[in-house]
Length: 78
Image (spheres, rainbow, N blue to C red):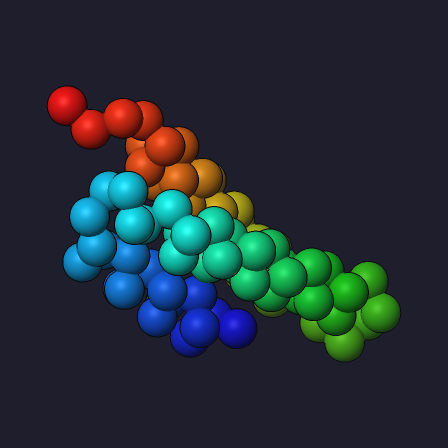
């Protein structure tokens, strides 16, 4: 899922502003699913607290960056 998210972000980076949105939106959806599965792994004890904490902070930052990129892609070009 992480690789698929990276691939979608890479593709979107080369597209015009009006064509980026579907790729960024799909990347956000897949990335949210990745975070969900990591949370389940942590809640079921498959991942310890230290590893989850080490992953969750950078993943949260990536999610915020994707959200900002999507919002930026929604604004009309000047």
